[in-house]
Image (tube, rainbow, N blue to C red; front, top):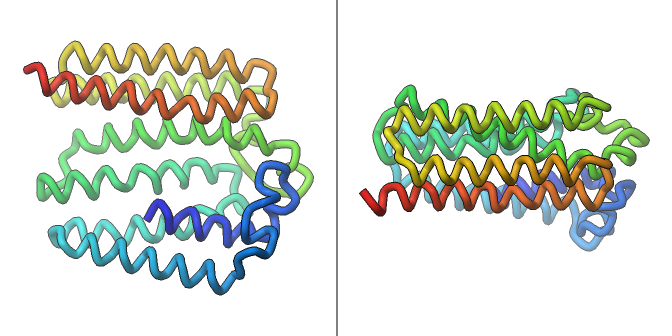
Length: 232
């Protein structure tokens, strides 16, 4: 579904990407891939994903419909709202209730704390991504949180990152995680500070670097979880 989401995103933006410096060479923008080919690939990938989810339980299968809807809707949100990053966060995080349902057979209340943390984190880092394109987006009329936040972008992304960390602290308490997990969160917090330093001048390359740096945030949190369970 991640791949399917990328395909439908490029299809939705096929007439916009050519006007944006970062995306002007995408296959649909240049005509290297046709719209029909893109739609066919989206359908094929979605069917493969649905076939895979059929191996899980009925609750997870039902939840997969929400994942499909979110993945399909997100690319079109930037035409109607300044909050497409929120929809993206909801779509990215939808794997959490699906995985939880597949493993536990239910949706526990504590699971939604993880969901919330991922949504907040995604909005923050995808705002960095949108900051790269902000000048182009303003010219062509595309909406984003980067445009909505304006001069308060650094402050608001910092607040979102802080809220994400706080949610993850609550997750640690709820699921009785230990010191290794909190060490991972400390590293993630340090990386968030580094990202804020990177975007201080709002330069395109620096904002994109801050966006990519979130790979290490995810790695730090993941490593903390693995180590916490490994050394019990």
